[in-house]
Length: 114
Image (cartoon, one colour):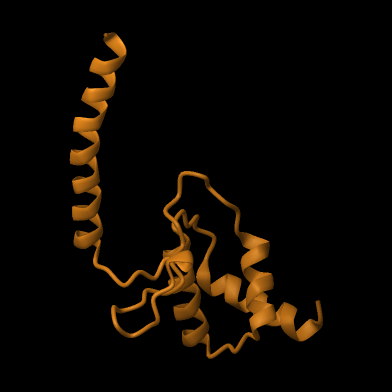
């Protein structure tokens, strides 16, 4: 790490403090606020270095949501979590399948006991 990057990180650390952030989304917000307040510009690689140096994964933590897409603003891509249906529509489909499966399960159980 070069001297300029080290200097930026030391001043940033002094301003941010040494508290523990268990929510990465909150931590990233505080990092952005602190960088803005100090008028520090970090390159993408410097920012990644910073996050890698001070972060670790807590398995029970909430997932980090990088971006939320508004319906109709982005192409549907179910593989990457962008669906063309609302959560209520998906929930209704799941409930309908459950109702269909209940009757089938009863028939299977009765048929097996004969």
